[in-house]
Image (tube, rainbow, N blue to C red; front, side, top):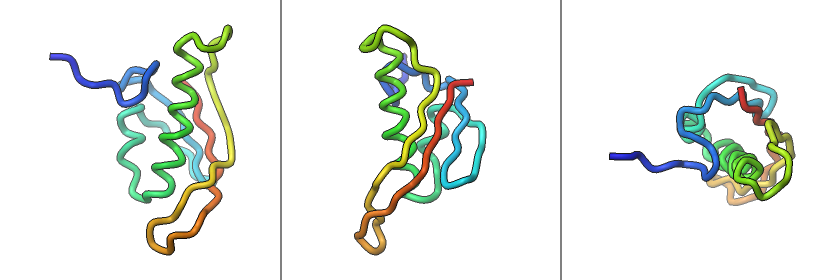
Length: 90
């Protein structure tokens, strides 16, 4: 039985390099959904979705990395937080 893809256009076991709030680590696409802080997980997964769209053929060239400043809402204080995120395919 096939497992569900977390991000359209990327395999769950695709290795990625993530830099989030100045902390870098190497993980898989499925491992990016296990981040401990909610606002960082939301920022990384939304950046992964944008990267996955670049792999599906929407654009003419394949995108291998993306960096952005993502605005997300913090669950504790219910205010917006800016998170710097960079995601690259390894």
